[in-house]
Image (cartoon, rainbow, N blue to C red):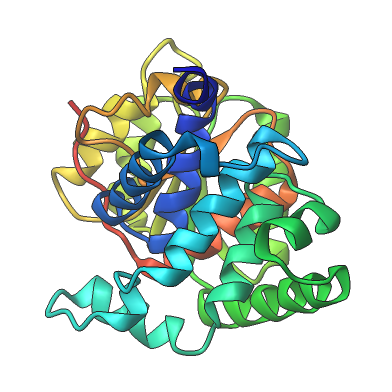
Length: 264
């Protein structure tokens, strides 16, 4: 089927967006699955104008807004979900959608206005609203695992400009384990491939054996991590990254406080 084939290249990024929007891997993937079922069951109703990618996200957002499975509508006994609900009550869903579409998926304001069926002026207001509210709520201690000095320095400066405290920068698995055990960060940004040939994933897995913490992975190859096999990262930054993408992912990870699982 032509539509199904066209969707495939977009799936890793759509799943990333969905997970960030819902703050949960299972919920995010469930919405993407529902989207695929909707499109494949009746492809004639899927309008590919003005572009296939824009139409895909427009259809997803309509589904997310209409189906009553959003976290802010669900009571939960789990602490991170309860915290998310509290935060979400202060940030309208449209504002969060607009923020992620711009900062994570790279859509322009005009494209977002098409996706959300809003005017460009309204989108600008939504983006400003979401950014301010997210930054106010999530200042925290963050650890960086990154072997490239320039990238590490850029990340550190960006995080500190947002009001966060960088507890340290690790270039190898050994450094990461030591830094995590002594500083106990509230969030970890981890590159996949480290300076000594060690793996950022292995370092994170060992850290998670000692305490739970949200993790954002950084990679140039997201399709290698978003394979559909569990566990997978809820939050993912692709290289080369834009500052707004980092801001969005960090805010979302701290906002939902989703503790990462050990990867297989």
